[in-house]
Length: 135
Image (tube, rainbow, N blue to C red; front, side, top):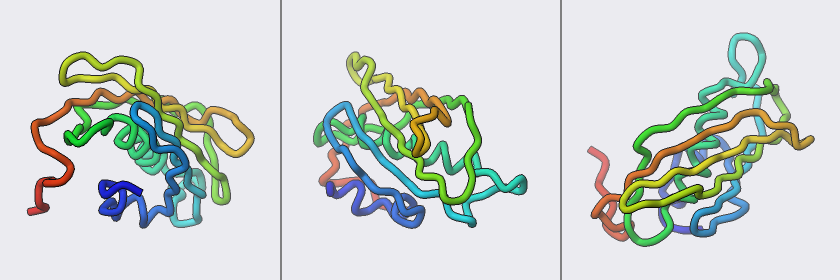
């Protein structure tokens, strides 16, 4: 597992598993727990977004340069609940200069689409060997 994900405490805390880590493509999965449900007993949308965002982050960090989100949108299609296994599959659509566009589809264990996410990336001049220190 690359250093970026070894340092990602939020993804680890949520129990995310990186299944595919390739330039421009990533697959990350997570099992929904009881403590991930909202007040309606369905998976909290923020956590579905977080899963998609993690796959996006892996896919868009294609080389030693640090690439970050410039923005993202999500459309929720289907609700899930505790015990669901969610999988986020991210794919590069286009990279031009320092910006890129990536699509992420989040599905449940039956293959139904739960959410569609589009992320816009910005590549910085920093390298992953020397990431910024938390303040």
